[in-house]
Structure formats: structure tokens, C-alpha cells
Length: 537
Image (cartoon, rainbow, N blue to C red; front, side, top):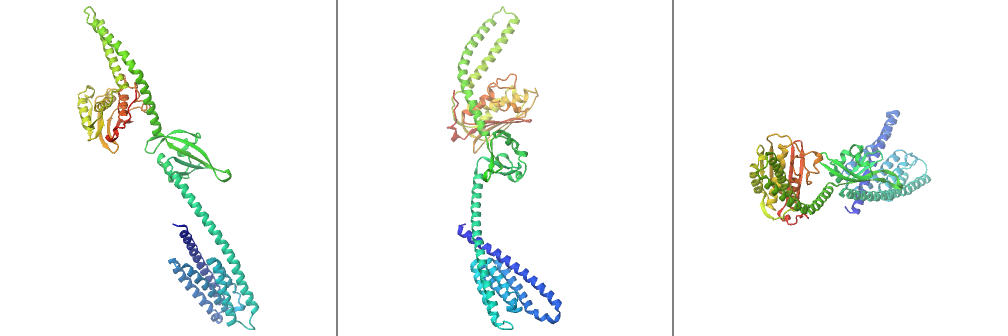
């Protein structure tokens, strides 16, 4: 709304309030006058009752006009004209009372001055001048036409007329002063409202959370971003002790902390605390700015992990090559010695152990070399559901899956990937789930759920088991090379899964609880697959 329109609306609202107030005050005054008249009439008796008839008529007319004005005020139209009508009504009431009480001898001449003051209140200087002129004309006319016993009281009439003028001058001055003060105050209020709205807009548009606390340690404000991060609403925390929810923010001026939302999700928050000062440096509380650093810390961990793997790959390539050559020579020599007929049974048993462990070591070196130096991606558009179904058919014949029920829930999902490597991802996840079910507890049976599908972000693949789950302390390390909780594991299965998914530009996450673990692989949409980050080393 334009400022001029706003100013006019405010003036109209102010005039309406004053009209309502003066109308109500007039009704109160007339009611008091009625009560006094009735009391006096009761004391004088029926003989003087006729003398009060003009007063009763004036009171009745005042009540009727006040009711009419009240009805007109409800329409909020023609307020200025109604204000001038109020001035005329005040003068008429004063004239009627003065005429009924002896005109120049009346003690109610001051009522004209009250009408002048009302005019100044309603219409400022113009209202005071109009009311004073009407009052002077009415009083002089009444004194001239009705008068009283004796000569015309010119001095008294002049004195009262000058009193009306003086009242108009003083009332108009005070009214104009009040109006200018009110306009300046309204202007300041508008400025404050604008600044407040701007401040609110800025604070609410911040992507960082903002929390303010007063000197008593109670929450005074929490912006929208803070509500989203913490899962707490301003309505819930305002006025409550900050230590109830935000005690971690006051431990140090700045730092990081783990925050658990009401949904159970844990995030990492970085925060900075600083004091709040009012005018003249007076301390009024403190504020906390905080940000969700979860994705940033995850990205840092991923970069560090990738860098470690890249460094590891450079060393592993040469090391694996140097290990395989002597290992092949050792295995060949043992095979020749084992073929000698003169060996005893104990010697053959020892050589079998050497050959078995050499074969295991060769498998480990091969797996490690494949992890450290992955083959280049050979992308092709495939259906993830068909690829998963083929892998599940092979897995069904694996000895580790003999007692495990596999529940597939495969929906068509187009993805551009290296089919062999994605098949290896699913195979490693299936092997990991089977070992989690049967390895730790030696139990028979169990269930693995395999699902895939497609959404706006690309294709996804889930492998969920009903095993014992993953310990919270191990969740951050399960994708590290050589980390394993199994006696015979190499610790390269999940690390290989992460490396392959990362090379496709995708992500792999894990949710674990007492009822098992769920691995979720997300591969980008085919249109985005070309910009996937390729591993180094």
C-alpha cells in the first residue's frame, strides 16, 4: 500500500476512534445530568416539575442523536461531515442547557468551552475555530433574544466570548502539537515496522540456523533454518530454558557437536556463539549461529578415503607384482616336491597346508590388485532388474546361500554402467549378507531381501539381511580396505563395492539396527553417468 494511502487510512481510523470516544463520553455526561435533574426534581416536588421539562427534552434529544451517530459510525463513511455534526450538536446541547438555566446568569456557560475543546480534538485548529465561532454566535444570540432581567450584560457576554476564543487558541495549539507529535510517532512506527520486517525477512532467509537467548537463559528466537535442522519449532522452545535443548551450544564459543533429531536422525552441527548488545553496549543476551556440516564431513571423509586408496593403489601395484612371482615359484617347487614318492604322510600333510595357504595368499593378492588397480569402465545401457535377476540365479547355487531365503523385489531400472562391475557389487553385498546371517552365530536359515527400482535421481539397488546388524562403532569403517569382523574375511569386499560405485558417480549407504543391515546403492541417471568421477591411481 502506498504511504499516502496508509497515512489517510490511519487518519480516518484515528478520527473514528475519537468520534466513538466523544459520543460515549457525551452519553455518560448526559446520564449524570439526568440523574442529577431527577434527584433535584424529587426534592422540589411536583410543583417544580414543569421547570425541568426543557432539561428532560434536551437529555432525550441528546440520547437520540447519540444513537443516530453511533449507527452512522458503524458505516465508517463521511467521518469528517459527522465530526462537524458532532460540533454542531455540542453547541446545541450547551445552548439548550444555558437557555434553560438563565442564559447570562447560567453556570453552564462552560459547556460551550467543552464544545470548543471537542472541536479541537476532532478536527484540530479548524474544528476549534468553527466550534468557537458557533458557540459565540449561539451565546450572543441567546443573550440578545432571551437575556434576563435588567440591561443587556455586554461585559459578561464579551468576557464569555473572549473565553471561547482563548479556549479555541489554546486547544488548537495543543491539538496541532499533538497531531504533529502523533504524525512523527506514526512515521517512526512505520520505519520500525519496515526495519523489523526487513530484519525478519533477512533472518528467516538465512540458510544457517540462528538461536537467540536472553540474559535469563531463555530462548527468544529460532529461525526457520534452525527449526528445520533441529526438528524443534519456535513455538515449542520460545520462553523455555535454552539448556533443555541447546546445552551443547554453550560449552565453548565455537565448535561442533552431534545432534539427534526427533526422528532419530543424527547430524553434525558446527556452531559459533556471540553476545548480543543493545544501545550503549548493554548486554541483552547471546546468539548462536549453527550449520549442518553432515554432508561436508561426509565429503571430507570420502575425499580422504579416496586419497588413501589412490596412494594405496600406487604401492599395491608393485607390491602385488613382486609377491606373485615368488609365490608362483614357491607353489611350483612344493608341487614338485610333493610328487616325490619317498615323502612320508606327515610331510605330504605339511605340503598340503603350504599349498592351501599359498593358494589363499594368491587369491588375496589377486583381490587386492583388482581393488587397487580397477579395470577401466565399459559402460552400456542395461536393465538393473535383469542384471540382478541373473546374479541371484547364480547366488542360489552358491553353498553359502543353501539355507537362506532370497526375496527379490525387482522393478525395471535403466542404468548406464559396467555390467560386470555392478554384478560384482551385488555379488559382494550378497556374500556379505550371507556371512552376516550364518557366520557369526552359526545359525541356519535367514532371509535376504534384494530390491531395485528407479526414481528421479536415477537407479537404486538395496540388499537387506536379518542378521545381527553392524555395531555402531564399526559403521564408519566398514568400507575401509582390510577392515573385517569375520575370522576368514579379507576386508576387501565392501571396500570394492564402494570403489566401484564411486567410479560410476554413485553412492552407497548403510542402515543398521538390531534386526539386520540394509545397504543401498544409488547409480546416477544415464544422462548424468558420463560425468561420473573416475578413480585415480
